[in-house]
Amino acid sequence: MSLLKNHKMSSALLLALLLSIGLCAYSLWSYGSTSTAGSAAWQQDTPQGGFGQQRGSFSPGKEGVREGGSSSPSSDSPRSTTERQQPPTANAGSIDGSQGNHGNSANGRGMPGQGGGRFGGATTGGSGTASKYAVPLAAYAVLFFGAAAAALYLNRRNRGTLQIQKSDQRVWIGSILGTGLFLRIAAAPWIPGHTDLNLFMNWATFASNNLTGFYLNGSSDYPPFYVYILYVTGKLAANPALSPYYSLLLKLPSMAADAATAYLLYRAARKFISFEVSLLIAGLYIGNPAIFINSTFWGQVDSFFTLFVVGALMLLFSKKIGWVTVLLTAAVLMKPQGIIYLPVLFFELIRMRQLKPWLIAAGSAIVTTLIVVIPFSLGQEPTWLLKLYTGTVNEYPYASVNAYNLFALLGANYTKDTVTLLLFDYHTWGMAFIVAVTLFSWWMYAKGGNVRFAAAAALIQIAGVFTLSTSMHERYLFPAAALALLAFAYLQDRRLLWLSVGFSLTIFVNTYDIFYHSSHGSGAYNATLFVTSLLNIVWCGCLAKIAWDYGSGIKSNPDIPALQNT
Image 1 (cartoon, one colour):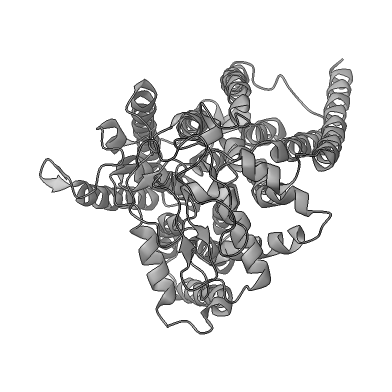
Image 2: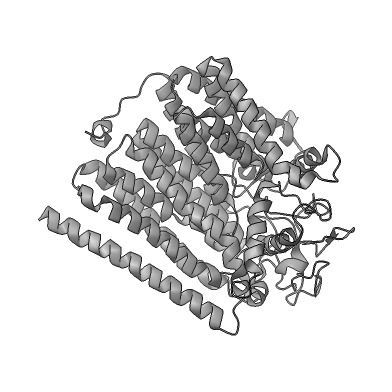
């Protein structure tokens, strides 16, 4: 009976995969053949008021940027270097975008402004194309988190009930990951996305025409690594057959990274845990609404960034210091917040107590940086990269930038970080908390004395810094969903599974609320902000308790034997 049940489930999963492939093919064909398809329709439907109004377009000319309206930044979104430190303002433009720039930008890819307020069509007014997906997405999220909680509960109460035959295991994992990827591809072209996509489009177009002059002749605040991905995207989109799918091509690297990260988590878990639980981990990631709202809806690159962090931590477990450093260096060269994870490598190098790994790490970091940076350095002054990072880091001098954390809970969202709270200003408090979080994770790492704690240390770093530091954006917590699952794979403490669901919930709510409901440039102080911020603080407290238990030698868990491979 069990074999028959497994066979039926395998057949059902294969059918789901085939249906997702068919739906993907039909979606792409339908999108490409409709009169409203292509980049032009996508540009018109993009929320947040369109590219011209909300931000400056990337310009290869001397002026660099043509600035749009006065709408505020939303996040660590890609932005022009001349458009910094602008506080949020309500009613940035009229419904018809009359306050924004219209027509073409300096590089011929300017976007018409539209929609009043922060998200244009994503809120009331505007096209409404984006907002029609809000309710289905919220409904799916409710079902997912309910199903995830039920699965974790039933797995604990009925351990070993589901046993999948070895011959069917590849079918199960391949079908689940493949279905998740193809459904993303099917949906992505029809979802307008965030204004960030407009900047990515402009940058991809310009990079494909003049890669080495990207920073010399233009104005961009994004570090150089992802520009190579944009270069490839721009080259592909230059093909007339692919140009209608420009938005999909921009989203594709992150959507593929969703599936790749899920597979890496599965592989990491499979070394220590049963196939069934490893499969659950992969499913919790690939089906997670907190993950695909970022890649498929928003169109950002946090999934791609997270793939590098997860890959680096897995390589660290295998003591491949050189490749660990390559990936972490690439992560820093992709997003400045990659610096948050560098202390984990530092912890392990200290624990190893050998000179050779330090030399390997230093050499790998230098070589990787030179390979990535040199093509953009021709004709630049020697300190151009340092100035780029300094400008990016100082871009948002606020206590919180739509991050639902401690400072948002205190009512300081988009409050200048120079404002005093008790004895010190917000910036000083934030820096003090970063130091405290890093010292705590180092202490726990040293007490645990095992590289298996690396993923948990990385989770402490991002969760602690996001929750307790200043200038955080709503999407900075994104890697926590993957890191909690990876930490569980290595430490096998079931509390980390629940914590992954908890972080996923707050990541999703924070992102969803800003994406759909923030019509004035920043999250309003309401029940959603209060509860989500409070929960993030609670999750950090739970994580600290788990780390303390592990560092104190309290590593036993009655569920662990059931999770071990025999």
